[in-house]
Image (cartoon, rainbow, N blue to C red; front, side, top):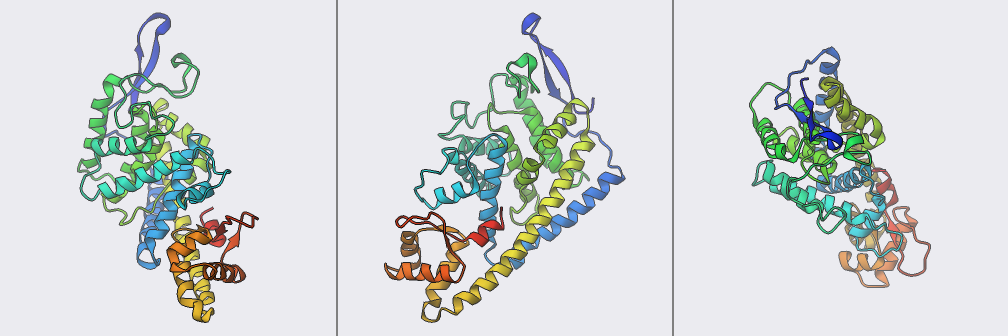
Length: 374
């Protein structure tokens, strides 16, 4: 097969079949359908890349998308914490309802931001991949599974044992060689479109499954990293986890068919559809943010003498859309009761909404903004 072959490991009752992928590059055909999907994805990505030039404070826009990506990518792997849990945790809002899994998502955000920053002085490489993995698993579930190191034992996906597993990756003795080949492929000069190459990199990484835990999350991070590394995107704006979570079973089926049925083209078509859908949705969200900001800026201007502090609070809400009175005091530079009065004015303007129903330790939400990312 083009992607690799199952090879028997051990003998007798202990025998199992492990998939050993072929070295990259792989041979596959770009038919009319795949070419059409690639063209649409390229156009959608081009529209997405212009967001950085038109959206005010694009870094805040990216920050929200990073939070969303971290939540959804972690949920694909079974994490229960929600997007709002993440916002509360980042704002250091104490809430008994915040799910304990939130630390895994915060680690994902930290790993993603760390990786993007490191790309400025370190190329996307095996070293960087291991550094990202170490931060992903720090002090959370899976922390005992050698964070930051490629596995030195056999792993498998699904099933109660290796003999009835859904998928058995290559033996650990093959991992370093295979990952070295993947790293070389990233920088191999060829006529292969970068978007296609990015899809192959993700599928091949998941096929190697180089870590004992966290492979899915690291593999999904590689896509925006590689697109930024190759200057296809000037900002890290494309995150596919929402599409993959929405079509989770298809996502798994396409990755399995990539190696078991040699269906490289089927995986690429699914992946390119995801790029187009995700990019177009992000562009629409950006447009909606600009409309919302314009509307609410006009509301704040109407506050008269409170307008200056009001604009400061409004700008803060794009970074921290959940806030407490103490948070307003600290960030806007107001003491009570003035902080409370300003928040009350925002409530009357329909910008903030109190979401706890309590008389003390209340939490206020920039609900319209959060919903744009829901």
